[in-house]
Image (cartoon, rainbow, N blue to C red):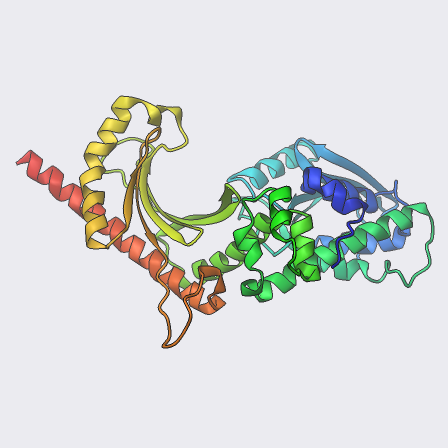
Length: 402
């Protein structure tokens, strides 16, 4: 089994995104001699969705974590003068709601009149959120970066200098990372440990592997603690397809996140303002984690006010009886009433219909398209439940007023 980790694998255990940003920033700056000026310029152009032969940059200054921006390069060339290049790098986390727009505002103010380029770099192609009235971020993947760097790095090539040796090790690290990720996404059912071991510590996990044989890809994931991250990649890959195929304007946003080692995803719907005539309204969503769906309503979930007893009492008076009725009608297995927040959810396991003679499957063993089909159906059911809950609430208020 392949267990050897290179230098960058070990560094990434501490802070994966900062390590990758630091190396990429250095590699494409004038401080690094692994690439020639012409090669460095070609890679930079490709990274930002420009023709590789657009220009050669005589200056390439790098700034890391400047104004919280992952990487900023400042270049100069005969054809374009001074330009700045902004890269947001995401491996484990996802973009915050207005993160990219905030960064762009800072750059436009600080580099007014200077050419500006923006890229959003991810492992599996998460699209950058649209920016109102601003420049679009170019979407780029680590797989594309690997293909771009292949011409300059490989064990078959002779080392140019010390910088090249370091950069070549980094190239091998991201090459392996993208290869294993692609293999996993092509057949998640072959990686059951990814879905079963995300909440286990290294010692516990490897003790359970004693006497068992893991292939190289399984060992790569296990030895680097990538189980939860791979789960997130799969859910993200699926949720994109669900949202695109449904194309329903009632889905206002979605997320992929994690808790206790298990990835989760959620679809967020329009807020309802009939109960509270304020700027918040009641929020409806459906989430999926570890084989279970949760359809929920909440009020100012992330605000401290939601924990006040008077707020929670008002919230429960509005929705608790309605969600109890939904639990019964839709045959949900349980109802959760938020103890510290104003939130109520009905929960039920994913329904997997078996073919005749078929062994019961785990949700992650489902063929991708079947899983997508189930998710689409559950999202539409959740929208139906939302409409029904609102109708029941308004009927209740009408009755009270008579």
